[in-house]
Amino acid sequence: MQEHFAINVCPGPILPIPQISDFFPRFRDFPSPPPPQREKQAERDRDGEGGERDREGERDREEVEEGQKQEVVDSDDDDDTYLGTLEFSLLFDPESNCLHCTIHKAKGLKAMDSNGLADPYVKLHLLPGASKANKLRTKTLKNTLNPVWNETLIYHGITAADMTTKTLRLCVCDMDRLGRNEFIGEVMVALKRLRAGESKRYNMGLERQAQNRELNNLNQEQGTPMAEEERGRILVSLLYTQEKQTLTVGIVRCAHLAAMDSNGYSDPFVKIILQPDMGKKSKYKTTVKKKTLNPEFNEEFVYEVPHDQLAKKTLEISVWDYDLGMSNDFIGGVELGINAKGERLKHWFECLKHTGKKVEYWHTLTQQCAPSKIKAALGGRCWAAWDGDVSVFARSAAADARARSLPVRVYDTD
Image (cartoon, rainbow, N blue to C red; front, side):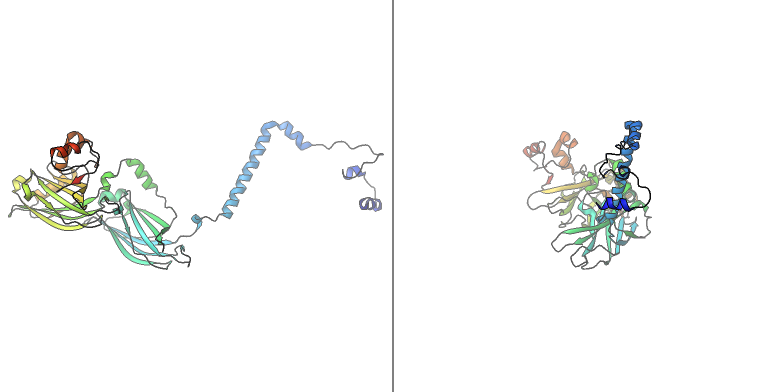
């Protein structure tokens, strides 16, 4: 009623009610209005199904773009959180084959504990390599987001060839009171960027997961198992004294040994034999170092042998894991002599050529360089297929026959 009243009092010409609104009732005196024109519907019909699909695609793209914008605005992921920075220095010493890693400090670390602080430490991992010996760590500092360590960690047995292929991973972690270690952030450094003998300082921002394309490419290009590298390395010194007609063999240290025990470590010792066998005078052992993958021995052993016979000799060096009982696990070995190759042959010849001079070399331990008694026990067929998981028992014929058929571990009974 109010609407009709407002229309009656408005001045000027009044248009028919049906033309003003379709909601008003129709009057008998006026003809019914024509159906409304649907121009947009007609255009869709003319365009056909192709045009309709195009417009639907545009609407879908607009919805996706708007959704993406919304996700960026509402993102609350940890990847967008500032994790802090790590300051450290690296120095490669080619003379001692050592990589010195000095961890200086970190700044602005992400709080990990309920008190708004953290108990940080830095863990180093030399890649590629799965051995626990490749991992070093700093001490833990309590209740701080700006820790200062000034601590130097050293990798031994690093060669110039390693510097072209290895990558150093530095992880900052939080030591939880419940014994759980929480990851904060990490950085990666390709060691080939270092110059030998020059210290380089880094100040890098931590990442949730550091991307290293060079490391990924290297793993794809190599495509070979790292079993040989993971057995470890040994630093050996040779000195032949012409006046005394003696060969002094020094077992300095080992690095990156394979873990043989369930606790992730080994109890290593070294055996050396000068072949052909000279009896008890040709066999020596070092002391056992408990629970370590980087043992330091610094022990020397002397052989009395004429210089003209030394060229026909072979020095067998093997590293073992000491176990309580009768058996010891074979870790790896190396042979030096006239039949050796590469660095092993070069080391032997330098000792023969430069008498009176101590010559030190790092050598890679392999499972293939096992002591000759193991090769003899296994036989030609089994030795060709030996992968380090075959047992050598006592020196009886029956034990040798069992050793040829049973796929268990390598043991030492000496």
